[in-house]
Each structure stands twice: as structure tokens, then as C-alpha cells.
Image: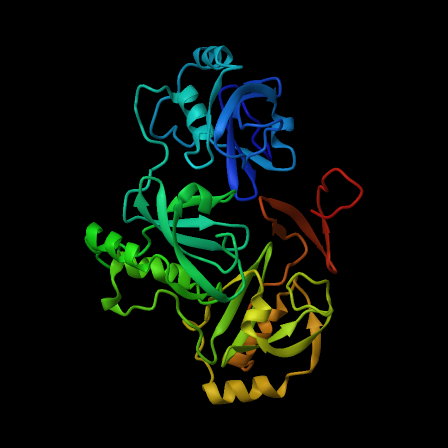
Length: 404
């Protein structure tokens, strides 16, 4: 069997870089044809302008990114004959075409080559006035309301720029071009509450949005009130719904970081108790060693990451009484305990606090010799065979180290 699908001539190649994707058509012998962005290199994220259709080695286009074969429309459209497809692709090499991350025309260019333009399909849904736009950044998301003619209304964070991830403070509601707000990130239309709430009439949505422009509001990644603003504009305040569940004392908090999660118990007034990893900082991902149980502000533990309330075992186990749970948690603050990402005992620690140890449950199945281990990275997965005593056998990538 083939552990990684190798491209065949005519395959679409999706190249993943931080925050965006770039697309190419594989033409054989290691080469692809793609719409390269303006500038000297072929990396994604360049501003809108004239790109050039190039024939280059796939390896050079991918650079430090990752790629996958992704003929994602084969279930809808019949691909052209390979010979015809490649002939057309070679004929347009060297031509200049508009390049824009916003309209994702590097993708549309290669899908047109593979399937043909005759179907007149729209490979990416364009926003309509009133749509909610989720802008996906490196650590979190930012939200905006599309108002038409390329413009959005959104709660911009404190400071000069409008990118998400700024510290808590007073933000300003702005009307700006979507392309300026998105920057080098990626966006999608995400009317994520339409199944629960009926959107207001578009005229009312837009009028309310315009009335908010220029107003100052608290900006916080923790409370995600930039999302709250636009959902209120689209659906109205009358519902009084809570668009993001705020933590209550006793809740388990899952903090998502690249490649792993860290867990904490919310104890109220913005504070959590958690097993902090070895070292001065409380970030997940530290090596195995002695961690310390700490009581800290949730905002300080989360930092630039995102979090969610995740009482993920309530359907299996009855939580302790809140007062008893918090008393036990406060009593262990300052104690040292083994910290290991492998055994996920930051999660085990807080689940024990919430549910109690009496049930003797195993929150994470420990590997046994012969088990396959999937190691999830930022762009892809790596696999290993567990052989016991904490060791695995795996095919390490090129380089001096054997870490993924």
C-alpha cells in the first residue's frame, strides 16, 4: 500500500500554508502549473495584483508548507481528458492573470483547467449583504458583518490595525474593506446560528450596523465580543441568547494550542486552578517533569490561544457538589505533581476534581505494545508503533532529529 498518495498528471494539489491555501495542477515529472502570486516567490498571502501562470517543480512551490492531492469536485463534475487538460494548461503558461487570496482564484484557475469553464459553477460562495464572515487567524477567529460592495462592519481591536488577537481594551466599530480586514488570513461565510434563529430583514441588519460605526466597545478575545456584536446585528438582541457559554464555577476549561490541549477548572471571578507544566510559563507542551498546581487568571493561562467550556464527561459521571469540588481544588494549590502531555494528566487532574476518583475510570487509554500511535501536528499527522516502556518505533523524517 502507499502511505501517501502520489499525484498523477491532472491531479489538483492543495498546498497549505499558515492561514491560507494555494492550488496547483500536477502535470508530471515533479512539475505543476499554477497561478503564482505577484512578486518573486510563489508563496501565498501576496496582495491582490497580477499573477503569472508558471510551470515549476512542486517541491519549490510547496517550500515549507504541506500538500495533498485534492480533486474535491470529482463527485460533482466529470474531469476533462488528461491530455486535453494538460495541453490547455501548457498553453497558458506565462500569461498574467489577476491574483487574489480573497477570491481564491488560484483555486478557481486549476479547477477550471481540470473540469472546464462551461459549467459556470461558483467554486467559492461570495458574501451577500448581511452575511457573517469568520476570519480565521493563526490562533483564533475574528468576525465581521458583510454590508456589500466589498465592505464589512466589525469591532476592530485596540491599536492601529484591525487584526484579531489584540489585548483586552476598547475597540472601535469600523466599516472597512473586507480584503483589508482579512489581510493574510483566510475567511469563510459562516451564518452559524441560522438553524436556531431567524435573521432580521437585511435593511434592518445594515441600518443597525451603520449606526454602530464609530462606537467604542470593550474588545476581548476571552469573551469574543467581536463575534457577539455581529451575531446580535444579524439575529437581533431580543433573543437574549448567550452566543458563547461563559464559564461557571466548577466548569472544565479546554485550552487549545498547536498540537495539544491544556485543561483547567474554573473557580470564579476569572480564575482557574490547573496543573501548570514545569518551568516559569504555564503553556502546554512542556516536557515531562514536575508541574505545580496554580490558581491563575483564565486570561493569563489562555494567552493567545482559544478556550471552550468542555464538561465532556457529564453524560457518564455525576459531578461533585460545586462547593466540595472548589474546596478540594483550593487545598491542592501549590502542590507538585508529574506533568506529561503524553498521559494528558493536566486533563486527568481537573476531571478528578470535577467527578472524583472513586469510580476508578481511565480518562485516557494508555498505549500497549503493538498499538499504533497517531501524532497530530499543525498540518498533518505522523504515525508510530508503541513498543513499551515509553518507546515507539517510527519512520523519522529527514534531518538530524527524530522529532516530527
